[in-house]
Amino acid sequence: MKTLTRASASGSPADAAQAASPERPSISTTTSGSASTTSTLTSVAGGAVGTKGALREAVEVVVRSFGKHTQGYGRVNVVEALQEFWQMKAARGTELRSGALVMYESVPSTSPPYVCYVTLPGGSCFGSFQYCPTKAEARRSAAKIALMNSVFNEHPSRRITDEFIERSIAEAAASCEGNIGDADDPNTGLGAFRFMLESSKSKTLLEFQELMTVFQMLHWNGSLRAMRERQCSRQEVLAHYSDRALDEELRSQMSQEWATREGREGPGLVANELRTAEQELQDARLAGRELRFLKEKRDVLMLALGRLGSGHGHVEV
Image (cartoon, rainbow, N blue to C red):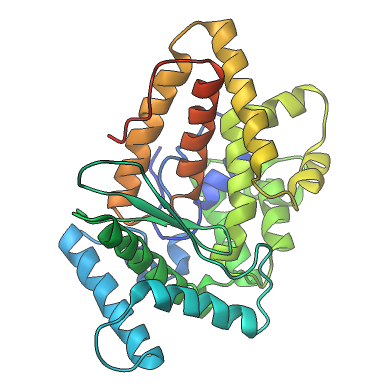
């Protein structure tokens, strides 16, 4: 099925509705996307630019513009600029569950290209999108794409409003070939999606990312289907997980489920899934897309592989 226009901050409306509706065949959640209604600016941040050169140029323009207004003219220290951006947001009253600290994670490597991921205080994740000959350059590359998305996220079109909700519901219904009237029924996938959007009204799409990622992970892991089979209503599931962060406990639980699944279905299941996840993550990273769901998926599978005591290692493809 055709994927919606890609943007930077969250899964598409179809992805979100699918995550809340485990009975339907999966609509791809391997590419980050958002409604085309979010604005043409954000499609640049999400990798909808036709060439890597255009993406690099767009990033540099935003970084220089932000740096000029905060650090004056001259070379911009993009790592400092990104941290300063989120500290300013916290100082202005933005509620950040984990504080304003920007977190970096370098992929272990003894030779280039080096790879670095950055997780923003709101939960979104981005990665170095260029060939990086040093670890410091990889960190700067990740900070650049994260800063551009952070700046774009302040655009009014990135805030969840009544108008945005209605457009997103309509696009999700069209993409899923569903009935838009189902959006008024909390027992349907569209209805659950509406509930998620309504509960996040006035938030930006980056702030909505944490909730979206939790349900994407539950859908991918098979947990939503399992809860449905135990006769749990969608309202109960949404109420339980709406304020749940993706933490070590949830990752550990999911990794155990994957290890158990391999024990049932045969050896190689987790390793094969991990190879696919690595490729998806690399493709999205190089395109400058938001990576939280793909990276969390990869991390869970690596934990599961460790539980199995496998000799297979992490391969950044």
